[in-house]
Amino acid sequence: MDARTLARLAAVQALYEAEGQGGVATLSGDLGAKAKEMALFNNFNRINKKIFEQIITTVSRETPVIDEKIKANLASDWSIERIGGVLRAILRAASGEALGSSDTPKSVLISEYVGITAGFYDEKEVKFVQGILNKIIA
View 1 (tube, rainbow, N blue to C red):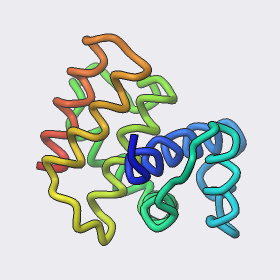
View 2: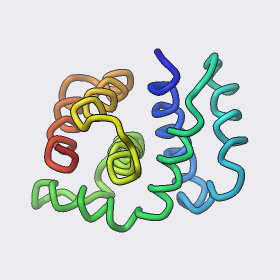
View 3: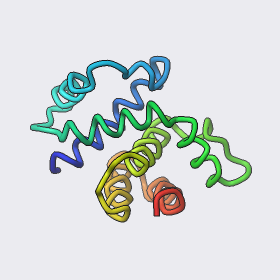
View 4: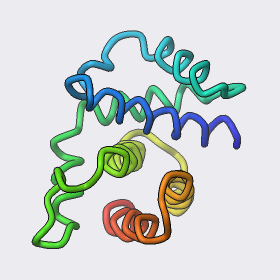
């Protein structure tokens, strides 16, 4: 994986971890150090710190907006709380990157996060994430 993909994966992991520790606000502070911590923990050679920091900063600032976009695209009998923590982190990271100052084409963002999802889940969840992201980002 390249440094950009690894940054996205590290951001998903950091968001998932933060949710279990009281929320995204716990990630405030030195995001460069957090990026380095995630890279070391995962044995990544290098990650793109700029992308990592942009995702975390945007998700931290825009979580209510991002969550509303996710909720608006769920089936009526689903809530955002019903989505597993890793899936929620993936959707938030992708939405945050799309909302932020990313110059990455939206189709590439969707592809990247669908690929990350495939690393954790089976086809059913991958299709779920792809469907939601196609509505939110595209």
